[in-house]
Length: 367
Image (cartoon, rainbow, N blue to C red; front, side, top):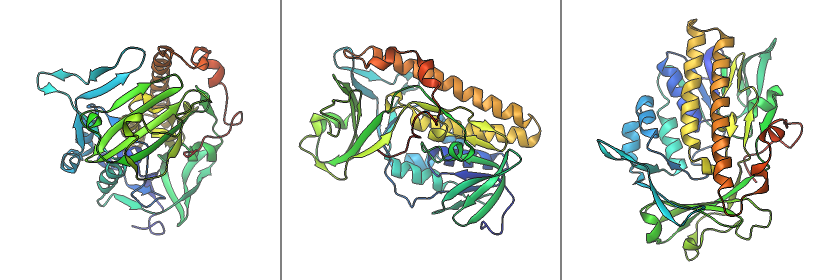
């Protein structure tokens, strides 16, 4: 299927990361015809993240559980934490079936597995293909102008990440809940036995660092500075001081923000395209998968007539806003517990949330 020969698909999805792939897989399960547009050629670098055990049921529902198991991702029982108290080990938990294990999945491998699963007569992936701007008719999004030409659809899902491609194209403001935050991250190789068994997050006077073994001999680190005078801003944790960098230090804008209207006539924003929090929230990929699946669900409801377009999109928007508010409250409590909490965590969140995309620069994915 090509853009030229299929101007009338049900859903166009911009972005082939976890949120976009989950949207596509769930839409196909609902009988919808899908085209995914991914501008980059994989593999691509993204900040690392520990995936909680809660992703396993989602992988099963999306039909990728076997592929995930075959990938042999590193598993672990919990995380070492140094925050406001002495260093401790936080296990994920257990039930009658035994202990719960998280995943340490390199994002380039995880993204490839999920996007490869988007296949079949009702699913097409165009890669590389750039989304240029949304197409509209009397206030409703009706498709995407792409680098390969126009593609018309009944729905457009923005899963393109924190650049907020669709919100920017439609002039939808962002609401901010933090000052500008940049996460620095990188990869190193070598031998670090103390990090092989479990990841660690450790706070200090000027921010926090996360580190993990993501494959034998390969480690990932992320640094979030909570002070402008952070001497460790671009540095890996001390445990990695003797290891060899395998890439330059990169940056990602993790300012807390949400699209003020994440769904509307003909469109839905998912994953980071809908809302962004810093990695201390610990479930960016989980949020991407769940929001992608939820987008597929509400679109299927609207297409089947089980709900009106207005009711379906508002239900999605309310669900996402509730999740974002709960997560920002939890993060504020976490940062208030630090020995040196950043001053802004004690401010009124509403004062930041009222700022729109016109009040501060639209965040980009890279520092």
